[in-house]
Length: 619
Picture (cartoon, rainbow, N blue to C red):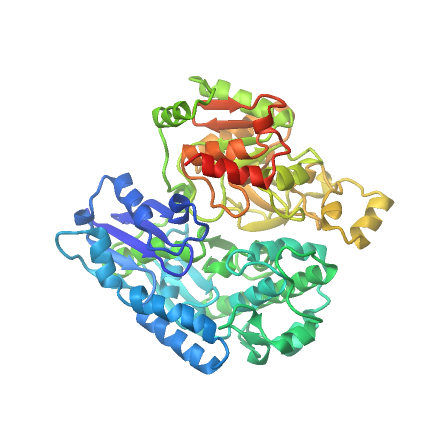
């Protein structure tokens, strides 16, 4: 047996993954255990979980792999600060002590944290090698083109290459500061969202706007070549600063950055639409050039930009590849399994057989809890619950509650690895109800009202409801697709006027556009998750029960958390979130808890303040 621990840490979304004899047996982000969103700390708890899941001790590890090369990254950071000096000195002053105290001493940190009696080989990989390995080795392809895109690793921001059998080869690269990820993050910050957290908000805002600034972006900010290579005009950016943009950027787009939590204007939606259009076109051009270089028909992707499902869908729809597979944890967290798999296949030369479904195991790689463990938590909190020994009865009751308009917290099986809730730690609702999108945003998630929700759909019925490309599923919620024409509903003249001109994004989001309005975005798109019985039989069974009851094989699926918190990990996390929000029903494995109608402590009018109070009360 060969056990390899992969680690990504100390920037954002720290994670650990354990690969045993070439199989990913466990993976989790540190944030799920510490409850600190995007936690960058050394993933001690995630490592502890991975080892316990396999029944191993630190001394059982044969290799430890780290997802990037800290010394090379430190060199780039120093050079970047020097190039910006004296601007960005505040960021420099904050960053350097952390590097000198911690990030440059990882060998001693690993020895201390793992407390092994004897050393094992410690392997430092290139950041984009880890991304590439995470994309290709778990993919369903014997050979594929490889594309990685993110903000920046050590120096690389974009890499191109190919994978065959048990080997990957990266052949072309673009280097910092020329980065599609940083370009998109600059607009994220300018529109008042947090970098490394709010990029998906910018993507969700884009359909409310028109790409009226696209020409200005192409003329002044990015020189995009026909082959997809590009160069940013650094006169408009300050990547070493908090704002990421210069005064020249502000003059070009009509003012200073939006303050967080201030009003969103149509201009911000137009900016989002414009940079999204540029990003999608750039990804399409890069993909076309990669296909020409490699002459391969399959593509795998990773890196933070690969979480942009709109750009992914444009590449799949208009690009040259027949099939595309994207690492579900495409951001830095995915570097943990990627680095471990790179050691197994590339460095040790172990063979690889592609799995037709993929080797990611549905990305259900995190902790799970027994019924006894859950009951112990609930009993300690004095919770009143039902235990349902018959799985079919539980499914029938949950499906009926959803059909009755109740919002359900669904906690079953192993936690998802990656940023998407895929039916193990999910909040679920009936997508046919026009009020559900607003209710979920305002009374459950406590988040911006313009944001859409994803549909989870039975894979066997997906094309009746969404215009997915023939032969393509979307099991990891990384593609968008139009709602099928047959499911759309006519828009009244009054609603049409509001949709085209009303400044209130929430009002525009509330307009009914289809038979499943809660998951239909303003441009009739949806970020689809296709659910099959192979990857997640439990969630598939719930969807099937809801379909049998209602004739609709779709549920609105959003992550089981509230704004500002990571997805729930433990039964205690889930119960706390249940108490502090407007959730009506909680399913924890075979236990079911329903709120008493009208009870003060579970009112659907609960505020975010109440949420904070409940968080502190349940420690």
